[in-house]
Length: 138
Image 1: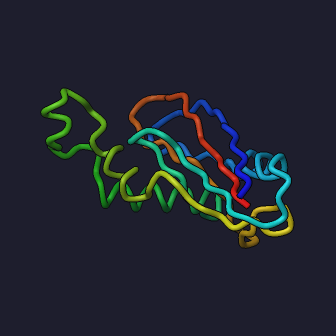
Image 2 (image 1 turned 90 degrees about the horizontal axis):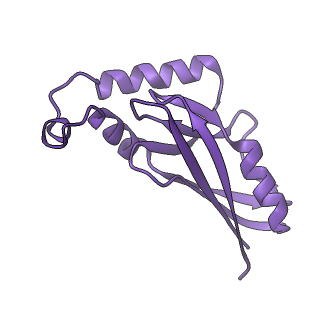
Image 3 (image 1 turned 180 degrees about the horizontal axis):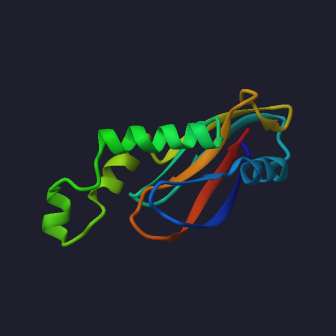
């Protein structure tokens, strides 16, 4: 079973920064040269996540507001107390959304809905450099 891997690198603003990475994932899929398979998209790190969504300003704002209600920044989190840190909310949000997605590949392209994009979300409380790992299996 052939496997092709690629890495995408991004600088983020943190604080819920959402980056549409669909084009980069598609480039790795195209380089794999497979007509049918699966594309695994994974972000190493415990304060970032990968998901699919309609990546438009209203949807992004709605996601941020929902996560702010579910996991407020200003709670007395144990992680912050024990580690002397300020980003426990980022760890929790990333755990809820998750670090990866698997997208089917058909006809050499990601098989997604018309309004669906693959996005990287950085929940950390500071700008970061992120690497996204894409593996295409056929």
